[in-house]
Image (cartoon, rainbow, N blue to C red):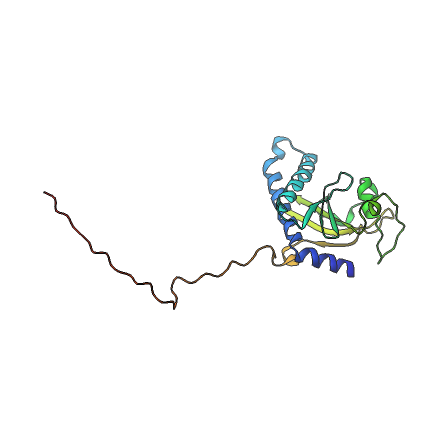
Length: 214
């Protein structure tokens, strides 16, 4: 699929995907470190916390990066790099392919109804094309389990699945193997070794002086 390949390579090459994965890891650790089931927090607490903290962490990781701008859609947090806008969606752990977009928010329903050249379907105009011409809206699906601590993060193109079919036109996991080296980590410029062939700096031993005391 050309779209999947192009999106993945551009966002991966820019370090965008590495950044959101870093933000997800930090958000997950913060939520599970701050909320305890023993203290009475329930699944809804973790869900709301994960949503809010992830938003803050993504803002933080892109702070100062002029290539990424905040681009919300109908109040749903979003970030845009070039022609790609990314919204977040929390899913049940282990069930990213079971998301039902027809039961989600109107905004997510509209995203799932975007026209897709490789699999045309009836589109419902809810304002996305009119509001943001030339922008493709994708979804960053995130989840985590507390015991054992595991994290899931996927980038994909939602598919309107009121027919009970697949939830994605395409979806990829943001794993270490899939992402590879983080392009944001610049190589540190090599410095001269402690011992080199360069001419030695002249050195002179300082003469010791002594003073006598009575």
